[in-house]
Length: 131
Image 1 (cartoon, rainbow, N blue to C red):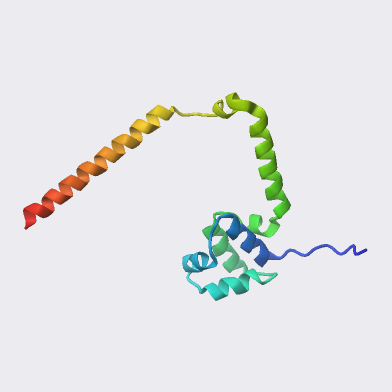
Image 2 (image 1 turned 135 degrees about the vertical axis):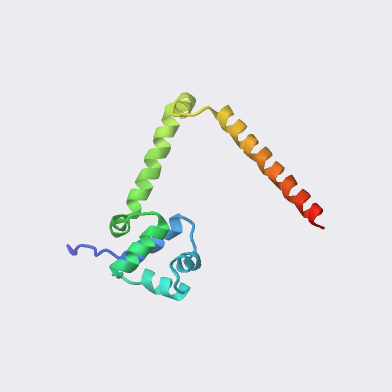
């Protein structure tokens, strides 16, 4: 039985986090300004250059520490606990955390939609007048 500690595989952690966010290698590569093949190489590496790691963390919206210390078990535990807590709280528990009036948000969105439509009409009228 081996007592050796499992080394951190930073590239694999980057890959797992990227996949959790539903991001393709190509999208990450374009955001950083490198090729998809380079991302593939990075994800296959146990160690990653710190400067590159900072860039990747920024694009993924996490800290370098999250990438370095990422464990899939933690993600599963988080989602299992979230599901358990929301299922046990019942319908009242779900609504008790609402901090805004939903009707106000609907009205706000409707007013924005109306404003966009007015701007579109003004734009089209200006185009017609210009001909």
